[in-house]
Length: 459
Ligand SMILES: Nc1ncnc2c1ncn2[C@@H]1O[C@H](COP(=O)(O)OP(=O)(O)O)[C@@H](O)[C@H]1O
Ligand SMILES: [Mg+2]
Image (spheres, rainbow, N blue to C red):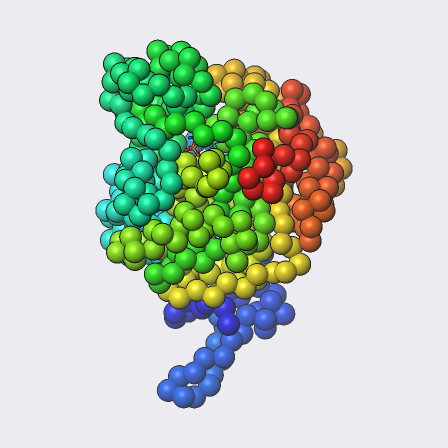
């Protein structure tokens, strides 16, 4: 049975009456047992609010709405408002700097797109509301937020993690490089979408040295040994002290086909495969050893590990504690009881995942616009054309519809085209078929998603 929130308020009942057809309402009627006596009431849809913008929030909220939830968005950034606005009511952080007032009537689930909510001045007030948040809090959040904390945890539980160290300034960074010369990937020590630096992948000592002279040390740097390109990820929900594997995934992080170009700020494509049994072994090697700590800190929420296969074993390069843009909406499509699972996870309750065996694979392809991945390059707000009807999901990112009704790009990442399939080739074919229908001057995508880096361990 679907999770049903408590009592029906008069205003919600009125809203239901207005919004639902009789047949929809009939489907939502559920039986309750009150002191042993069965009676039925109209189930109130789960109220979900997404904190975010763009394709992630558009995708998550769309699928949740399809599955019967009542959705809205708190727009946390000044771009990417178009997609979420297609799904339900939105509230702009420019008008509501503190979202707590929006939440006073209660919601059943908050889905943050990133962990930066925990750095906002309203954080404590928000937490006091006691709402179910699909994101761990407190020490549990540090697994993503603080890279050196994750490294220490891996050391404590003997999980392979590359040689890594924090440097506070350029002098320290250069000393680390000369004392221990290796190619290093340069990262922000504290993860946030607003960090002064984003990951720079260097593959040789000389490349590392060149970049160390050119970066902003305001928050220091995390230098992590470069491990090569045999990368993969695994995503699970942690709830009630247990790890529930969802998918193994791949992200195509390089900007151009053939895995050429730089590792872009966000991936150009993604694959997910249902993997409750952990067939590639990433969860066993890199998540399950953390179980004592996950329990100790009452971790509940999503966990994603990104890893590289080197020297005969998987090694952690980072953990995330949220569903990502290239996986979240696909995962929701893969679960028959997705909304129920997310709410239960946010409440730290026992989970029972029900996978939809008709679509074990998903593929996401990003249409990037003029200037990407060099986001300093700004083009005009070029028109975006959709030439034919679309037959899979399209989650809009940095676009807006002008007064003339024309869709225009307002940034570098236009949309994500997302298809599910019974097989990987079927999902890939469908995504490709559809992304070709969308164009914008100078736009491009990676037509080779799925052709490399899969199955996990390959390059
Ligand atoms: N130590 C490493 N060795 C090889 N590649 C790496 C390493 N660290 C990061 N990368 C590459 O850079 C990407 C982004 O790094 P990651 O640590 O996931 O940070 P973020 O996602 O916060 O940018 C990875 O997905 C991977 O492709
Ligand atoms: Mg990452």
